[in-house]
Image (cartoon, rainbow, N blue to C red):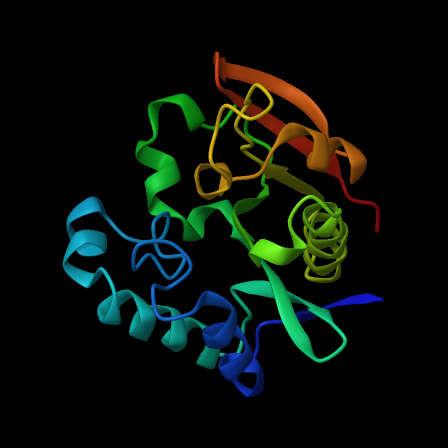
Amino acid sequence: MIRVLPATADRWDDLAALFGPRGACAGCWCMWWRRSAAEWKRGKGEGNRRALRRLVDSGEPPGLIAYDGETPIGWIALAPREEYPRLATARSLKPIDDTPVWSVTCFFVAKDHRRRGVSAKLLLAAADHARKRGARMIEGYPVVSRAGSMPDAFAWTGLPAAFERAGFREVARPSASRRIMRKALKK
């Protein structure tokens, strides 16, 4: 039974254990979308870990952690779009309209739990989390991959199938390899 909980200060050790010494992927610590390219590069590794720790300790969870029993097995980053400055500079991910949205920017699933529906469960929990905080729309930016053509590590923004299973629908195709998918949230 998988349960999904907010990444709060008391769960920091679980998140750090899930991400491991490399910070999930090459010292990122899920700070790619939150920092400029120069800041991210300077912070690669320990600096990005400290930045994520500050976010977790701030009181507003920057994401959710999936657990299998007591073991952390997955992560999803989400916040109001404005909290991700790199989205504003990503040519293919410009806002498609004036609708205020929460953005899902990143996933990390432990290797032995991949391809088991964890991402879809994280997305369902993310939609509920955002709705409870007043969001009316949530969107994500999955990459399109032909089966087996992309290493799992490069699908860190998710794959369309997981978004579809969680009730998201495609609203834009800004490039051949990228989709923008949304889910309306009810009060």
